[in-house]
Image 1 (cartoon, rainbow, N blue to C red):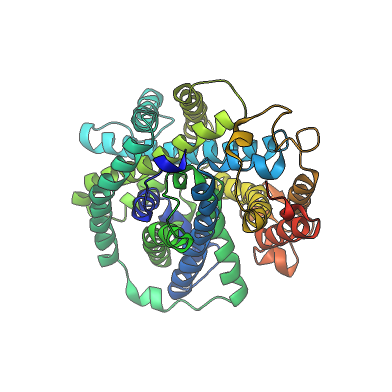
Image 2: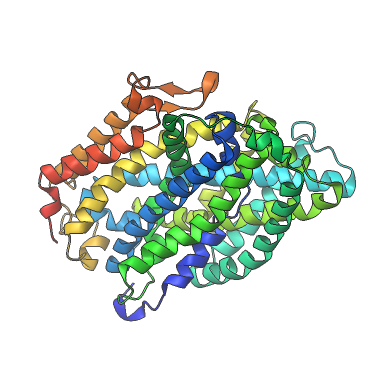
Length: 458
């Protein structure tokens, strides 16, 4: 985007991030803090602030590069890793977006089934109603692609106005949940050790801001060059932090009263059971709408990321490829897989490592870099100023790879017996307290700075 055509302001980003984070997925994340980490309610609320608002502050930092370069995050990443070297981070970003879209679509389809059960008496069990399940997934995907395929201006407008509608419905649902809490049981819970809180911060950060970090510049590229960096950080931290802190805290509060939420196979139905009958329909509409707002932004970003791979395809068609993969993935989790939250927690744990590694390298480069060459960013041939050595910047790639290896050494993907992967150092203090992502960032940023890669100023 040429500088003269960028007229965005931070409040636009505030509404975009707010809308993308009012989905009910914050509730089970909060429930995990109580059921798995055994935190007291006040500890879970503090962890929500540090993990959610803190990680989205990092999102805001990365978005500074978008304002500076006027290009999507993974396009700017070519300046750091090289035209070919950037393929690895781009694939990770695309997998992340596809994964989150699958989670959103699956959860929304559960809401659709529950709504049909109430209104039409249908069977809400996905495997018992395969045709209705396919319809639910298809409806959600169609609504997603309708907005995401129409471009940035439509997306911003829809996100802003829909936030008021679905935000209000979420407030009604939250008040209803709070009134049914047995407060004596909540306040009787003993506080967990500080280590459990640290681990909780890592879980929340991985499930919220870290997953969006490499997509933040996709929206900030429309910001006016005169916008201050601090305003971008504040718009992301506050825009996403406000709804996430409230929803995560509410989820921890509900789970403190009823721990079954954290292990529910159908999270939508589990929350609905806690509400009075008259609240069921408003709740399900709010759940469906909130997930839709999150998916709009994710699909928009995924389309841009697909194009960054160098695939010669119109953005609308890139979005179509994206939603086909999401459609099939959602059907698998609903009709074939035995569980939902085990894969969900494992997914965010695994992808948090390579994304955090990218953030470490990218931020160090961004701090030292004066500007981005717009011509070189779009040139994917040997003539590009960002071709470096055989299309790769070896110092950046080495730092990224070393950070990934270091992070996985301390990482456990999943929870309990459902863990998909356990690193050899996961039982150490750093690993047991969920600090693998901190190790990842430190190694990536530190090694890249030490190798002198951050001195590149093209």
